Image (cartoon, rainbow, N blue to C red):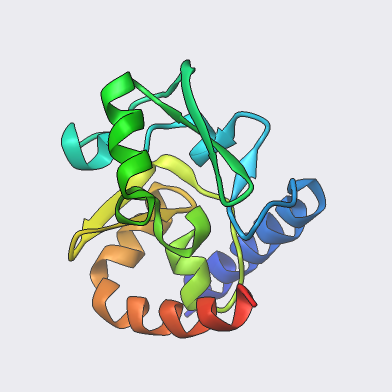
Length: 148
């Protein structure tokens, strides 16, 4: 119980700090490095790992800049961005299940039912994976409210 409280407090502190530094875009988590901190969203699906994008291969979508490891990945994304973009605008899926936006680490990811989910860090990802199906239901409902 104590660890759960500490975990929630740490996440709340991170969210508060993040909210002060966040760059506003159309409900897409974006840092100065771009959406997903400059990582290629297509690579999670095609390479089964996060790959840093290249500034030569970029596009703007939903008010954010997205980077890709190759021209092929860029073309793939442009053909169907909603298929490859992370859920909840790239915010932490676990945080969204708790009804708030939180930043992510691109290395903390999973694909569930063909959709990309990112998490705050590897510890949060472990908790996410324990009950991702239930958390997705909560996060979907919360995202519907938050993105309005």
